[in-house]
Image 1 (cartoon, rainbow, N blue to C red):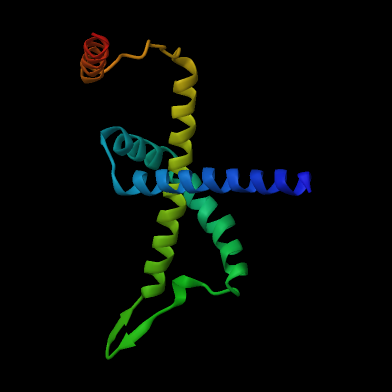
Image 2 (cartoon, rainbow, N blue to C red):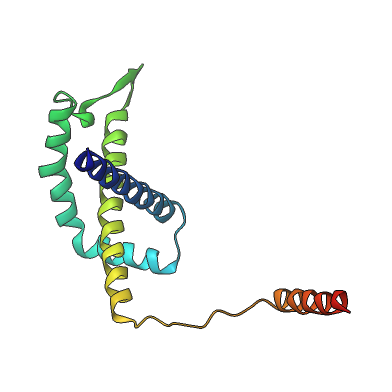
Amino acid sequence: MKNKEKILDKEKELLKKGNKTWEEFKQFISKGNALDLAVGVIIGSAFGKIVSSIVDDILMPLVGVFIGGIDFSNLTITIKDSVIRYGNFIQNVVDFLIIAACIFFIVKFIKKLEKKQEPEKTEAPVKEPNTALLEEIRDLLKESSKL
């Protein structure tokens, strides 16, 4: 029984970490700042071919296996003389999400390295001014009730 409880506790902890990471990832792709933008441009230009190769040659064939071998890029709708290549759009969205996830984890790794290099600052807890004033009033009331 104890082993099952330990396993359940570890699973809960992993789920919490996963949810936290997912939330961080959603914030990363929805709220960018100058550093994130700069990192995206540099990583995109320097590793664009590598990431494209990973997506096209490794990940998308695996995704194709899981979804039954469907090739998104060949999906089209023809309306009169126009051909709408919505499959290509789906392919590009999947590519974007994979690339964004790769960059997210790289940035997260770099931030962890930066945190390890900075020594932690420990500060003494500071009482809020209102708390000190309330404590003083309380003490005065206690003294006056004794009289």
